[in-house]
Image 1: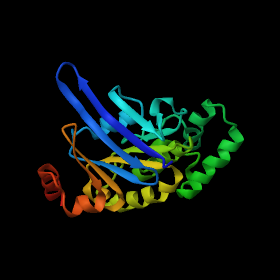
Image 2: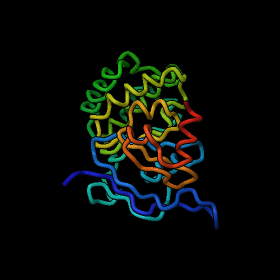
Image 3: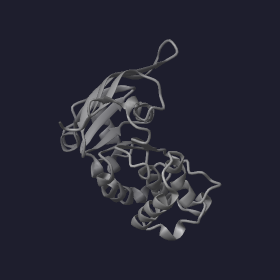
Length: 236
């Protein structure tokens, strides 16, 4: 049985009439990079947080036939757009904290953390504090921290928002590099250049609705919805 994430009729309404998400339906198989694309306010971050279990919603979400909220803690990792590293802890301490709370052994975790730091070219930063890091370094540390939990699904919210626009290529290379470290990678962004570089599938959102869900090459070659056509034209 192929592993896949399936969302059925996901909706979120705030108050009596403010629709944040409306009847979101799609499925994506493991091994892909799914990009949630759309303008600011389209519902991308809310949907990402719902998948992570941080937002209430109606509808169902399953992974490999199992409800997401029934998965083991740490099975879904989320990297926030402002990274949310603990400022009073070193890089190494940031990486160790969550898995240690699960009861994992510190020595084994240190070896695992150092392996990630070496992989991301940050081994010399293990005793540094977040304020001593660049935006790109903070981003890699935040991703490494999420990977320490060995997530099946890794979510990234606007991974270029806190970085220089010229770093889009670096971020794309980084995400392609970590694709094999989890079963499914989902990225929410409004950055068209990043989406073009990394996406296997595109879910284009507009005001909480799915305007299009298609293979990335088809979407960028010939978007069907007028909203997507306008978005692409404005961003190029």
